Length: 613
Image 1 (cartoon, helix red, strand yellow):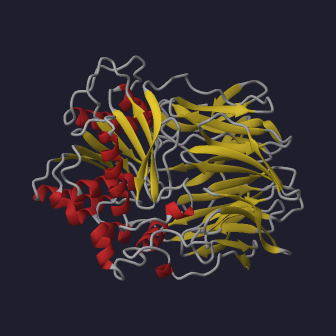
Image 2 (cartoon, helix red, strand yellow):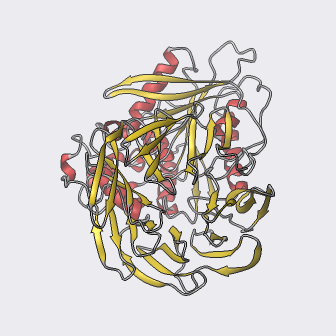
Image 3 (cartoon, rainbow, N blue to C red):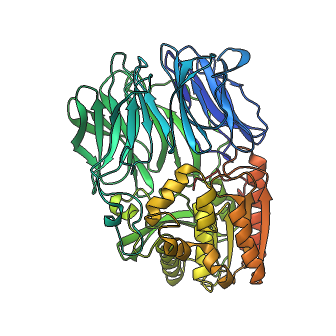
């Protein structure tokens, strides 16, 4: 399906609702992510897009038209379409405002619904393919299109799962039919003494889309019950119903089977995945067999078969089709060298799970230097899944440590809400605890640990270097939050809302919390060499606050380097990611002990896919 050195998040193809042999997918095209069609009968792919900045958002409708969102370096753009068989490239919603994509849906009857974020507002649009749309409504807060009924009479809009109106159902005329909140709970009652942390126990709701069955208007949801996760459904006549007979102890997502009232549930659990087939009418469920590892994406077919995208740390993603329809072929077969294992380290609320990749011994007599590759989010987690950056580091002779610190998903609602030491500080404590555990077991060198992170992970790199200056040998921070107050004031509306949930208020309301967790406050204490990478068009982790942090490092004579990219926060051009990877590897080689000779199979410099803050 893709080259193993992917520069975007792997996903299954989108399948034409009227012809399952017609698909659209994203793959590598000269180092960029671009959109392709796949004809399963002819086993033939055709490239659809060729954008200088790459293309990632795509869809295919029942009439066989391929849709894609073409954006510029500032991550603003518009929807376009052309037929699966070729033909002219046409504007999908002519006259619609340029912005960032927040969802697209096309009904079998040809009604198009889209959400486009423009500055501090999100416009919800409806119309016909190739015609000027009308604005259904405009929201001042962040939201995304959660789905549209097959008849086009109801639209679901999803905001943050923690919001009082996590899901809003509206008619095409703009009338609000329902809001679907959880039980109200004051923010201050949520968690520890320093900051509330993310999430309200029992209050969070995630929109999973309307049933695709003609004549049905049933919305699928996931609810956080405070201790487990459950499926829920909503209909105009019956309201909200929670199916508590089937619950999971860790995060789930769900998709309708096309022609039944069954649901395919994907569960993230302890860095790996499980699939469940759930019959809402029969109140039955069964596990769908998959190999050990991670299922990055899964989709049910009309006949009950399931397509899924499988991977583990040693193997790039491979598409599987249980009904025999040919999916686009995977990229070249590669295997990550070394030994890949798990480690559990006790902390206050339980045990931190770590995915550890150790290089081949190759004559080594001492433990290897370690690079802690820190995931973003914070509501995300590292998976037993292929990561091209892990591949390069292990093949270069380094141990790679991926820590699912407190606040990560995949370990239950309580773990995700556990911020007892405050925003950032809890996670930094977990990184230090895992490092000490690895050193005590003789698995990594005691004096040669470096940190590497992107986005929120990069923020943790800066905070760890400033609060534990003698612990880490070097740091690489790519597109970080470096000054919480400045970042909050200039980032996107969705991330400002996340900040308020994390800290329990705005910088004006709780300034001491922002200051305590801000890397800028401890920049002068950093002693380890630091590489900071910023993007001049970044709207999530804006460049201004990074420049302020770099100035503070310079004023304190902290050894550091800066690299600037002419991109936004996310990117679909592999050359940029490869440039960052090469610069980072050179930076680490100059500051960590020389690794042992590489094992066979070292890949060319790959690019790690973008990670969200």
